[in-house]
Length: 170
Ligand code: K1U
Ligand code: ZN
Image (cartoon, rainbow, N blue to C red; front, side, top):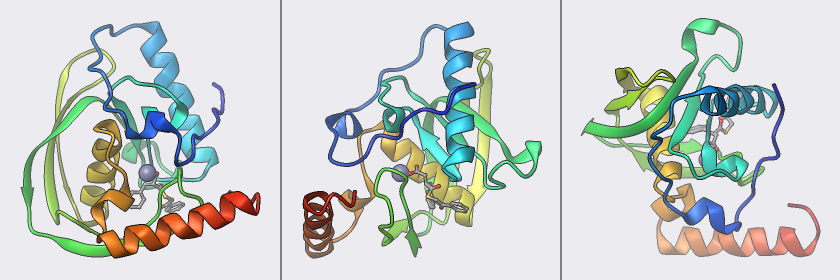
């Protein structure tokens, strides 16, 4: 397993929609293993392929950050098929170090995906799991958390990031 570099905003790969996975084999398993190791090392509770510079539609989620095996999910070709309610809460993103934003997300989601063998999966998540699944699937569509806040807050966040890039603090 390798710990991969996490791509930071404004790298273009973060804004590009991913491609559906068609080949379920050793290369995909290797990518998933490396993404899990990278998420745990960060540490984070989720990670999507564009955040490690890849364009496959795959993400990993683990609300326990490696504490228990039971919470780990590897989702191939995930998509939200149902969503309910809206909650505004603070969240981070590993591609935006030390930036927290209040983002509206569904309170509950149902996600359809495949596992690493290509078998169908369905996951229902509420609260933090719903937020994390929605955030990761957004990454796979090239959507970032700054895209989900008001233009004013987005502009403020972009200014802060520009300042931090200039100060070599990004
Ligand atoms: O996709 C990412 O950038 C990872 C991101 C996922 C996420 C967090 C919170 C709400 C929605 C999506 C993170 O994991 S940020 C780090 C984080 O939340 C965390 C880190 C260590 C322990 C607990 C949480
Ligand atoms: Zn993120």
